[in-house]
Length: 491
Image 1 (tube, rainbow, N blue to C red):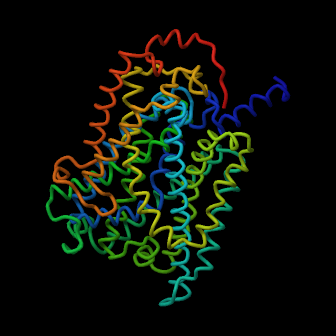
Image 2: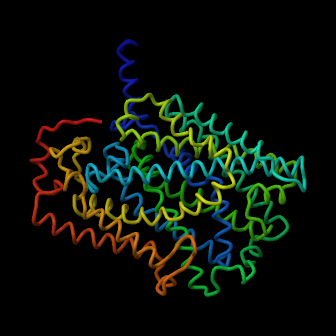
């Protein structure tokens, strides 16, 4: 085949990867276990997991808190994979497009908003943390006892934004290349930190050491376990946009679950959060840059902090890629070139760079409520795809914007799904407030995420069975007839 004949195919592949076009199996980025494992590690092992680790330590019992957190991660990730990962993998579509079959053509805008809030919110938090960590390092080395230089923090934050744009502007294939290096670096650094932390105090001794009971969230072992499981499960629930986005890039079905579970769950979030918890116990500090230098010394500690900061690039490029694809649901963005989309999404980071302390103090608290919304969404998508549609979705109808499509429901919105999502939010907040950590009486036995998820699955299934029995809404009945129907497809 000549070069002229090859070019259209290559262009189509790049456009699909950087846009909303369904990605064919031959064009997908992750064709082997190792590259996908690295990409999932980059998502799960961001530096803010070290801060999560400090929260685990303050549960009150270090051993119980870590155990509960890992259990919650594993249990919580399973429904996330089934809700978003399976349909996105099968049809090569973005999670927002996948959600149209359950939430409606227009109702999926709710997931779009939450996806952008989650990916951009955590990205800017990570950029702010990077700037603050660099500022802390400069203070320790060159101005001990003084204040962190805000100008230096801003400069580092802006440089991180520029690096993300430079790396991602030529397309998402850079993510696979970058995470091959950043993910092993993250894991190696975490292992080194674990060694340094346990060099003077054994691992078993640290696991048996707890924070001051006056500072602990709970003294009851059962309640401590419930807190740990809840922290892990709620963290996993925010993965709907991330694992839906990465599932469309996976080539082989057998790679859909295990690399994500290992990379993002056990190795990524699980291991790095455990190191953070042990570090908080060993050093009494919750700030990574501070306790790294405490345990490793100024020289070696500085090298470790620099590597940690650079390793965040793998996570940041992944997050901005997911946001860049999703935002193309908005017509004005769909008409833009990829590098311009990335530049616009990065632009609020200039404000973040000048207000890093405020962002970390306020935005992380607000993002704590994200999982409450994603519980209902995960329940709706999982139940709809697996139980009601039995894994039969018409991909062409995901791109129909009017009532001619199968997934129009009522004016483009599945109001049953919206009601269930609101129900999940209300029930979750009755059981647990993620900001104040106030809990309901049943929390110590069942937590909040898992019972809320179960209730939403049951409510949505029963309500939609009634709808399906009485109407043609949603394309559940006469699927073959819908499949033969000629529709106008558009992006």
